Length: 360
Image (cartoon, rainbow, N blue to C red; front, side, top):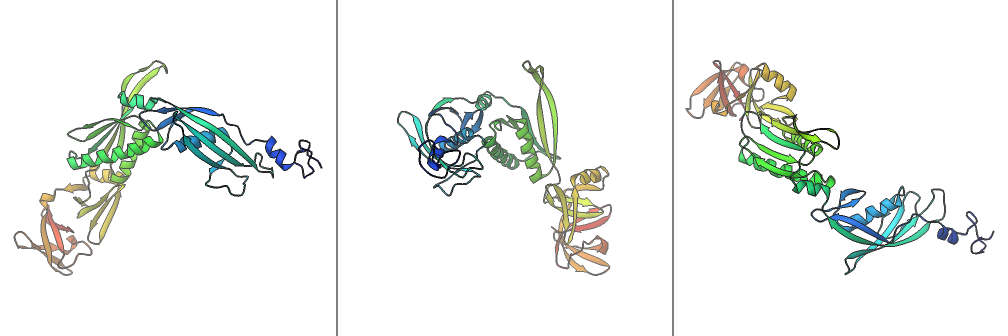
């Protein structure tokens, strides 16, 4: 059989030899010049929508993938055997003094999933940048915000160290979100006596950060809404959301009285973990609220605890040596936690004429 294009005798595909078939068929087309709109204040560019980038290569690869459509591109350092699953890409960049980038690209793949003839296709093009301010930067530097994230703690104000820690952590989370979604920025931070407030560009990101903090530090998340204007274009009222992360007063290291026993808080993230020597109780925060409302769970002021040591211990009772007065205090054996042994350091607490001990 003869190729109708070049006349060579060879196995044919659609009347063409392998060489002519590759010349007649194309993987996809690309323009010779692309104007790229990029933000001059952040690392983002516009390709139908605004998206972030770190290097010029990110823009080049996303642009080529857009032009390739449904074809999957895999960027290689050298060509491998052609595959039907994807198109292999090699490219190089050159920066010209005139202020644009030249891209020299080669593509290797199949134009049809049933084709047996690979196509090697060159595409050389230029990238010309035009700089402006993206919508998110315009809103950020214009003071725009959709939500306020407030961080508070039940029972007391946040300390300066806690405020500094949350400031660093929320800033880091916001920057991480902004790399994926341009509206994840913080417009303003307000350090208040009781806690810290963050004005956030995105309500979605605000909720995500609040949940991330809650999973690490525990507490509850609530929302409230305030009317802030009217959107004439959408024809509806606009509301601003305040998302409050209220941290539990049951902090790690504090002491509580629960089930007629004295406990030390060993954890207070997604659950409240109470320990004393070998004993442990784990409560979810719904249970905590219920027990607190029933007054069967309460915090114990550390000033009410005195240091001591178990001087003796048998099946009926125990004696605790008080480290401040060196007085020996008798205890009912029922008030001694499992796992406590003679010589152990303890904290002693008196309630309604009954003395309890806990591991320090």
